[in-house]
Length: 226
Image 1 (tube, rainbow, N blue to C red):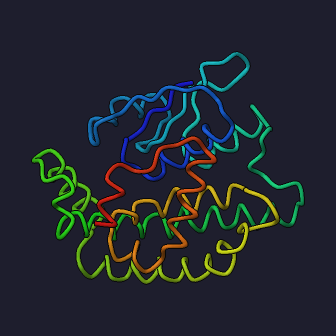
Image 2: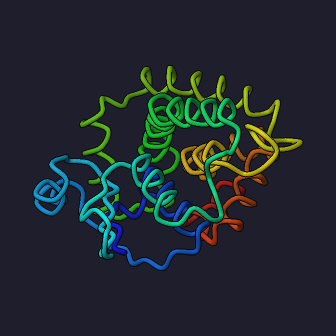
């Protein structure tokens, strides 16, 4: 299998965590933001990543979107499962996955890129890195005010997670797509010192989930602790 991705995208991380959890061999093709359209648009009809090319018999040629990739992987290799057996619990897990995809993941992007454009510049001050940050901030309208609103959304999500993650799983009594999604989409915050200091339990859980899924932690995570 081949995963088309941005190496720093937390939505692409979500797909990698799922592949790693199921121990499915795959390769990645890292794309350049902007130029990626030339690669993915003819395949998926969309402008977004991740895009998975299963390259297997009796499988679709292309699967786009992290949620659809996990749905495909569940049918391709059901064990170990990310979906829950109980129908009510599974419905809730999918609702939480959608909530994180649509609200929390986008909020994390705002907070992360606002940080990287200011006090987080030192993480990677290269011209290429700063150019990408500038493009992303312009594309999504990221500024101090929009990042402040996003930070409140993240605070609300962490408050909900704190009721469950400190003692167990988000839904049911085992690891599921809800836990995986939260770990992936909150992972960029690990580079921001205030989040690491204020929510140590959160990043311990995210670290544990990365280990379960055989996925390295984001590059420069240690910078959030220094």
